[in-house]
Length: 302
Image (cartoon, rainbow, N blue to C red; front, top):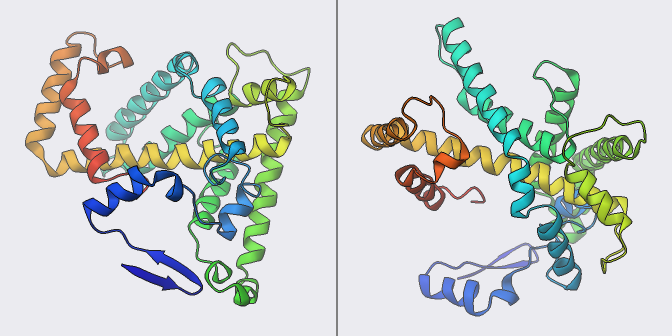
């Protein structure tokens, strides 16, 4: 089915046959994303991995990210961060249940968990819940996520861009971009500071700055490239991981028999140990099946 939103033609795919044709047979022709104002502005005009068009630049950037940022060795190095933050969350939930007689907001706690993990992995800092830095970061992150999904008239009616400016959306977008750009630059300057406190493991900013120093890449890495990739890490990782965990918990609460079976598997696996680490997950096939089913029913990018 073909539609038109303003000046933009839209193709609606509603059958398995057409889905296979587009996502498999003609994948390269449909793999790009539309050039939308909010996404282009916040991604430094498409310098990132998510909103850059499929071209030699994107392929080289993806190669850099896979080899330097998202490889199995680096994932393993940050295992202690993930396990530490999960233990902190469990302790926080336990203390909240003991101290409060009313229910707790698990969604907020999961979002805080994912943001803490991302902050420690990306730039080696853990923002405590009550500190102003944490409030500043989350305010910027929430505003960025809202703007990435906002409707701008100029995306569909190019001659009506003045409506966005009149409604204050352009000013809001530019203000958010400048604030996040300043935030990114502060992080980069901190990592370039020779007096910076020595850390056990390099974070994502360290890795990106190291790539910038090396001459082996076909891309001339600039600070804007580093900031664009950081935007992907912050915005993409925080919301999608949290959404998956929240949907999994919601689905289990709606299906008590499934929850009981998952609990029994976990308790039998860990027994006297008292907690689950990442090695134990490989011995929890039913729990893994629950997560996979959740991803099918509630894909984080839907």
